[in-house]
Image 1: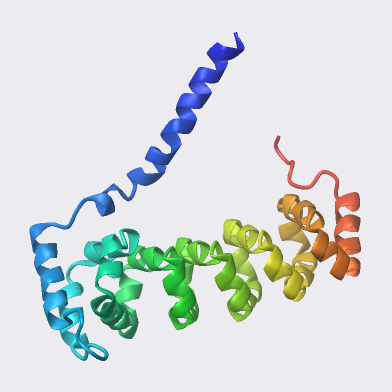
Image 2: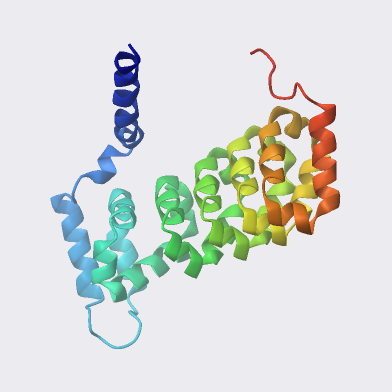
Length: 246
């Protein structure tokens, strides 16, 4: 009987990755003829093996701006970037210099932020995008992709600090806040983030699992005993938090 029950569950679990990719299935398709032509123009403008940086940034962006799917494809399938580092570097610089275009194509930004190595080397991209609050309100998945990169978050706490001060946005995007609070290294080094969490009781009441997870971080509890005590008091005083309507 148990085996019969397990089979549908296992089938569902196997289907989940395919379902998650369905929304971006278009990005998984190889470049079209037009996109291959644009890619060829980029490679010609910045041939491999030549010394120095590619100077034809304007030409590169002209080839790319009408093909945002190609930009997403290259960031998701990084073999071309690896095989053409000089052209890739120039292409990335072209995208960064044209922030308005990047903001108009949030899926490209999300693909870039999922490219952890690039984000580590080019944090100014995140800083620039995160200063545009209206844009970030409309595209929280970009922030979520950035904060899932734990190394990036630990190295650039000023971005998280800006979001902590933006209470209404965090209230409407709890997944971003929860992703930040999963980062043990960040929380140990930046306890002021947790102090802000404790002060935001309404948010914490709706997401008590964050407090419980924090108390599982031994380094955090050992280095910040007062904050740990406040979190324990919160859990003790709000035993029914997050259970409404269940």
